Image 1: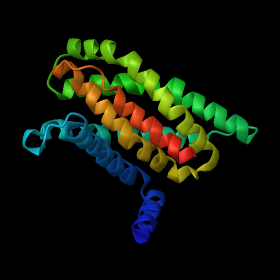
Image 2 (image 1 turned 180 degrees about the vertical axis):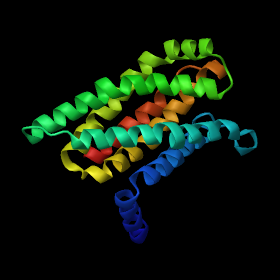
Image 3 (image 1 turned 135 degrees about the horizontal axis):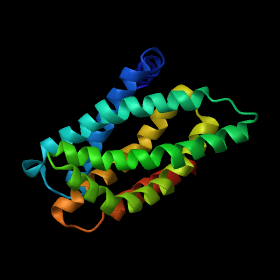
Length: 200
């Protein structure tokens, strides 16, 4: 495990885009597997592999490059004090970048399912606000810790660990309209509890 972590850390430094895209692909796909098997309890005989593939594609080809460039931009910004650096980076990340990314996720996933732009608009209107609010509950404290204490090349990894729970939640919310089930609040709560345990 230690050798793997050293190799992963070295790859983050040498090939940040490739490594972070591969990590994002893995985490989004893993989040969907957890959502289908542990939350929705489908069983592997009824597992929707196309859905897992769509989530993995979104993570690796769309979200991964976008968030990699975003973190690189945030890391280049200079501030007069460490406190201001954390405050402004968290503000920019959560109140400028994230609102667009949440809409981008639901729109992209709906189109990848072969549906229309009208369907994408309906999905965004339905899921956007509750998802964004829960995102703030999980990722504002995550990013405060991340920008305050974590070396810049490892910040994506911290987000990735928390995102395993968050991606499970996103996958369930995205599938919600198809199944007609209530919004999977429990998954977001799992992520919030895991973050609280890390802080303690």
